[in-house]
Length: 285
Image (cartoon, rainbow, N blue to C red):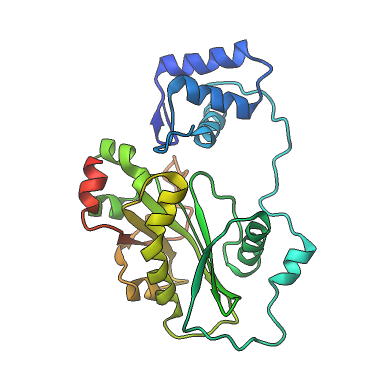
């Protein structure tokens, strides 16, 4: 059985069942870490893939393969509004005269910055805020100290035909090297900011620094960026202006569509190679 990019053998499923039965005091988080230890399921930087393991076990339970202990806490909300933070992300009554020729890109670090980033996305991005599992980076873009844009990068799509044909990798190569593809999950320019070519300038700044930022946090450098642009809501003009390549359209199935039911909007697939030998890195590792 295959879950979260990993094939689980019958013996491994038996091991998980035995661990659950023999360790009734372990909660779901502890179980996921123990399973990762037993199966040597780790990220490229050596840390346990416990979040992926937790998702995998939830899907195993939904498929009737295992019985998990009840959750120790209620499922946290996707977004929790905080009045002071909410006030900070409202459209200003008087638009500040901001000089946009010099942009500063800042990774999100401290907790308040994280809450502020979440609030901007929840209020002003059409998709709202959603929890990003796994490896991720989020950014503020500021001009004269004022926030003008926000971006996030995280795990890539497990498979998408236009991208996979463009790379030319096999299923085994994709499973081994997918972490080298990073997805631009959110890109928001605040609605009161107006500046020609701003979006493509921001994308150019981000692509010049993302490899090093990713290496600093996770210990390796990605080789390819991807993003999905919803049609007909957007045309991807800013990505084209920033030298991203449009590879075609998705089939509208979504990440978790196992029954081949088209339930998601059609999106165009865009990629940006971060290194010249990206195909060699992605196919050979």
